[in-house]
Length: 328
Image 1 (cartoon, rainbow, N blue to C red):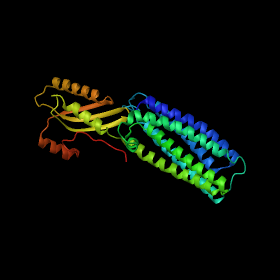
Image 2: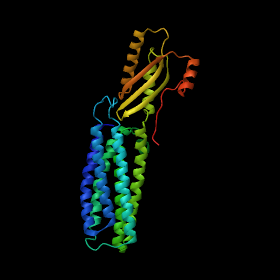
Image 3: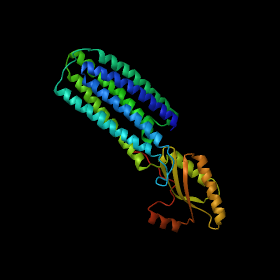
Image 4: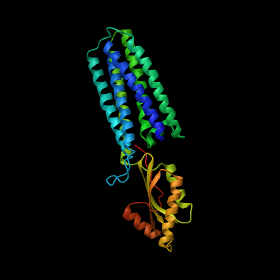
């Protein structure tokens, strides 16, 4: 992910949500609409989430230390996971509670009856701008993947989080608009409560999706199939390596990949020639996949019998090229 692109999308969402939260809360104070209160808290939660994503991106830039020799790149995943918890608890559960309370004690709007409609229409416009920015930045890196594949496979969490949050915000605003409008038309406050409950269910679902996807990133995902293929080609295209015996990849962060491989080399190679060949192969890997910043290549002598013994002891398949991971 382009760090600048992700940051632009987060800042656009943050500014939009701060403005929306203020106007929604004013509308709630004037009308006592539960949908407006739920949407106010939703926007406040989203604003806090964007601040968390910015903080996570900043902290992830710290250099490696003896205690954390691979750096802090995966801290971005931690903050994205916290975002899912905030969205679930502060946004979703609060909306469900408020909707239940309003359903048991329904009432219409006493004053400023059409103000919520105006606020919601303006909020839809602002959220649409934020959503458009997130889509534009995501298109730069999405490639041929559809949107579901992009959310599931993206190694940088910020854009998928902002995309889902903005999508949820737009749908939630529509729920609130329907609930408020029907309450104004019928005078029945349960329409407002139903809109609030729908918002709560929507936010809980989005929070669960985000939690599942970021949990996979936290556990550690391998390189994409495209990057694995590029690494394999880079290793095998020269005469230094006979074959890849097995290989593992792991994302240390969205833009940092660890590559560890056991490679078969010529039995008669000298130590000096072997060291030179390994340096050459590492250089090819970094050229093919620039995010492969940490590379460990272990030379070995390959034979079918030795490979079978290694397979049994290491529980790996002898001729693998690499392992990839998808969320889920």
